[in-house]
Image (cartoon, rainbow, N blue to C red; front, side, top):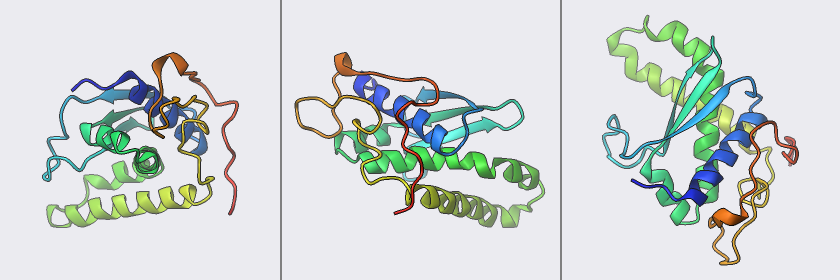
Amino acid sequence: MIYPEEFKAYVRELAFKCRYVTNHDEYDLKIKWEPDNDPRDNSHSSTFASIKADSVYLWATISVYPALLEKYEEGDLRGIGESILHELCHLFIEPVDLLYRWDVSSSQRNYFNDTVERQTERICKAIHMRLPDDWFTPKALGLESSASGHPGTIEASEIKTTSSAPENALALQSR
C-alpha cells in the first residue's frame, strides 16, 4: 500500500493537533503507515488505526491502516478525525489498562477489552463534542485545501505543517 503524500500530511497534522487537545504533548508521537489491514481484525477491513504507547517513557505510535485511506478518499474527514482522536484517548486509559490487564481471567478478557474501548470512546466523545464543527477540515488544521474542491484533497505543494504545539490550535470550547 502506498499512501498519498497529501493524505499522510493531513493525518500527521491531525494527529499532532489531537495530541494537543488531549493534553498529551509530552508524548513523542510517531505514525506508522501499515501496508495491510490489521491482522487482528476479523472483519479484515474495519480497523482504521491503532495505538501502542509507553506511559513511562512517554512515546506513542499510531498505526494507520488502509481503511483510513478509504475514509479519506470518500471525503469523510470527521470519521478520520474521530479515529485518530479515539486512538489518542487510549493514552488516558493506558496506565489503568496495564495495571489490570494481566490480572483479568481469560473468561473476563473480552469484557475487560470492551470496557476499555467503551471508556476510551466516552472520553473521545466528551472531547469531540467541544470541538468546533469544522475542526477536522484542512483549513482548521492549518493546511491549505486544493482548488479541486474535494474536502479531503490537499496538494503536496500547498502543505504547511507544524510539528509542535500548534499556534492556531482551537481551544476546547463548549457549544
